[in-house]
Image (cartoon, rainbow, N blue to C red; front, side):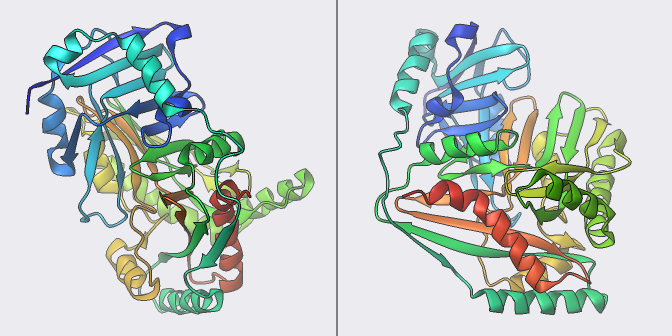
Length: 409
């Protein structure tokens, strides 16, 4: 393989494209509230263990020299930490942060050195296309992979084991498969998600796409942040009723206990890499289109030399919010009772640069899209007094975030 060069240019405000249009159907995307990344093409695919060396090995022309400039790799990591995976380094990447936008081209040095970045961005946006409401399927078949009564029975068995002292918490998930009469448009799906979930992390990597509300961990130089979420209730659609719901969520011993389990693990794990870590004394209630979550911001200062974002992801994932506690006991219960291959659901999706900076969201509220088929999964955390029918209702509310964006005849 010819040596690769990564060349970064600053973009004027009128040269910065719409990130969704740039990502199109088959690019990469990781963005929230207008900031983040979109890219197209594949300059390199590399295994998780080799990615940091691969990024450093790319020749660099980067006058901006800030987090996210130069070559960047993207991943939707699987739920199981030891499952094989590859990260993607796009040929063209556009990034936007508080200081402005930039473009990075990665490819053979002789080609990138002579490239016109503005023309490359314009060509990529044109290739991404614009979703049309008239395109796409006209009929859909939606089916749960497991009967709801059977899943509730699994929840009852799990909570009995928690009460018996085998573990503190476990997360059990359900799968729904959508089959349409024509290929599903990922670009259209992401556009709908951006409209209905504007505060979430929009993501797309190798056909796995969605809108995650939860930041697993981010590293910006030596500052580390996370915002774990645990404890969820469906919204009722009325402002007064939702205000009562938020108060009930904050006052619930069951949901507060579930939430604190996750906070303690995130805090204690990050503390092992940091000179200090702290978190908000009280959780906040985060309203989304269809549910409300308990969330707490965690922030700290990494020890020097700072751990890379991938080290932090490896240490944190899977958190109790998507797995349970203790981790190994929860994984064993999931393997026994869930009857589901999660794949990339509840993994980690995000980016890493050559300096070890990056951000990863929890890979939830997503779908694995392949042609006319979409696989959608949602899960709930169980503690000893969790109620199976209530847990079923909450998974339906979570599933609706993606199903309402997919199923539109």
